[in-house]
Each structure stands twice: as C-alpha cells, then as structure tokens.
Image 1 (cartoon, each protein chain N blue to C red):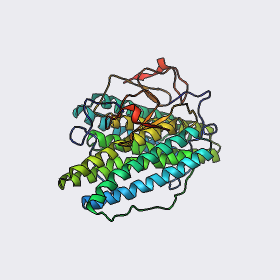
Image 2 (image 1 turned 60 degrees about the horizontal axis):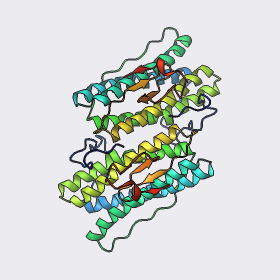
Image 3 (image 1 turned 135 degrees about the horizontal axis):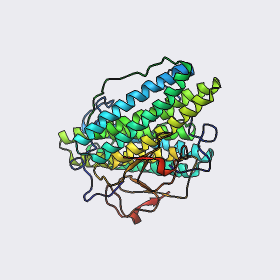
Image 4 (image 1 turned 45 degrees about the vertical axis):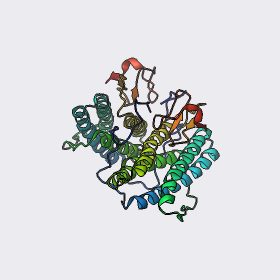
Length: 202
Length: 202
C-alpha cells in the first residue's frame, strides 16, 4: 500500500463504501464495538490455528503471515476494548473455541473472505453509525482496522498465488494499526505513518 | 505471481483445493464448460460496465485494470468455447444484459469476490470432474482459468488499497491464459510461460 500525503481517513479516502447487500447487524456504537471485538477475537483464533496448520503442512512463510495477522487482530481488539472499557468499565472480552483449520490454500481463502467482509461491510457500517453518533474516537479506531483488513486480504491472496514459491521476505506488523508489509521496501506505515523501526517482524 | 521452474498444474501446485462449503452445481464436463462460459460471460459484462464507471468516476488506471480483466475473461471463454464446439458443434455462446455498476471501490470488491469464487470453488470443482472423466483438455483449460482468476482477485484488492494513489503502471495481459501483470518487471507469464512481448498492454 502506498503512502499518501495525508493519513487516509473516511473523509479523504474513497474506499469506505459499504456493500449494497450488507450482512452486518448495526446497533449502537457501544454494541458495534463489542461486535467488532467478537469478530476480531474469532479472526485471531482462526489465524492462530491456520498458522499452526501452515507450519505442520510445511508452509513456513505463510505460517509467519498468519501469525502476524493474528497479532494485528489483537491490536484491533486492544483499540476497541479501550473504548468499550471507558463506556462500560466492567466489560469482559469474549473468548472463542479454537476453530478448525484446513489445507493451507483454503485457509488463505477463508482469511481473505473474512477480511473482505470486515473492510467492505462490517467496518464501513460501524463507521457510519459512529459518525451519526458523533463518536470520533470510534470512527478513528474502526477506520484504522478497516484499512488494515483490506491489506491483510491482499496479502492472503498474494500468498495464495505464490503458495508454492515462498521467498525469504519477512512480514512487518505496525504496532499501532495492524498494517502488514511484506519485505523491507518501506519507511513508514501508510495507514498511521508510524516509522518502520517501530514495526514487529515475523 | 512468481515464475516457478515448471508451469503450475493441478498436479504440481497446492492451491487447487475446493472450498468445503462449495456453491457450485457440478454436471458433466460438457455442462461445466457451458456453465463456465456463462460465468465468464457475466464477468466480462460486469468488468466492462465497471471500466466505464471507473472512467466516469475519474479512476483511469482502475478503468484499464477492469478492461484488461474483461479481456482476460474473453480469453477464457474462447478456450472453453473451443472445447464445447468440438463436442457440440451447434452450440451458441450465451449473452447477458449489461449489469449495474456501483462506486469504484465496491466494484473492485465485487470483482475480487467473483474471482475468489471461481478460483476456490467453481474451477476446482470442474477440474475434479474433468479429471474423473479423463478429459485432459478440459483439465488444462479450467486450470489456466483458475490460476488467472486468483491473480485477478489479488490485483483488484491491490487496486482497492491504492484506490487514491494511482501510478503510471500499465497492466499486461497474457493472450493465452488471461494472467495480468502490473508494471514492467516480468519476463514471461508465470501460468503458461508465454514471453512478455506476446502480452497486450492496458
């Protein structure tokens, strides 16, 4: 993802529309934050299971991609949880059972589909509601997650296409917004502008 | 997509599994060829409409991507039609009404979803049936289309992520299998090994 002159936001970027056939149940922003945490918790568990399966199936680089993306979802959970805790101090994060994993290619497809749903349906829907409620903190948090998810989807499809042609590239995870970069050719996060040296390598 | 030592096939590549929750009705290989032609005809019409919309909305580079991908689907139709015509000489290709188009970002998501369905559900299902019927020509044609579709999906997501940061890259279309490469840094098609100078630029 290229770095633009400004940090991308729902106001200056043109990829924030919600799909016409949305499957997202929209509640209050507090409810939406909890729903996002539940979705991200599921994604974290899924990618943790997929990373294990990828290693067992001999796809070491793809295992690292799943691990980096699982960690990205934890970042999103942290951002969303902080807002819920402000509004509802006793709130406890949900837990999920470890999901099943399949062949590595199908796990990548499953990941891509999940990220596409979040970036083009769930998060745009929640951003719109948070805007209506004037909750700029939630707009900001949902925006960062939304932008990172579509990059994850692209990464999963690129890995799918090169499943049998791995290379030595590491995946670099932005600790602030969950953006993931493959390889070394970057200087800062295109989503939140954090410098490369703050990233975690996988 | 990287070039491997050999042309990727259902036997030497590990991304040919069909999703567990397949939505594809599988018939005989002749019926599947016709179904694929119908699907590709719909995709061609969709991407032609999306290219027009992208131009109208000011996304010139994305318009070229949709045009290249529409042309790729015509290549797949040509490959599939040639096999049907051998089996059923009087067969006529279906036509479809021009579909609606939406905002450019949602058209890219729609395209990615369609390509992901074809590469991880429809074509693996048809390849398996053609293998069962010992129809190696159909296996070959479905394989080429399947491999190109997942690259199209990745291209659509990359364009979605950089929707507000276009560059001058052209898209290069392989005339044999419909693979699309962004930019100049390639020598041959990773799917069918055709050299760069046989490609068409968009």
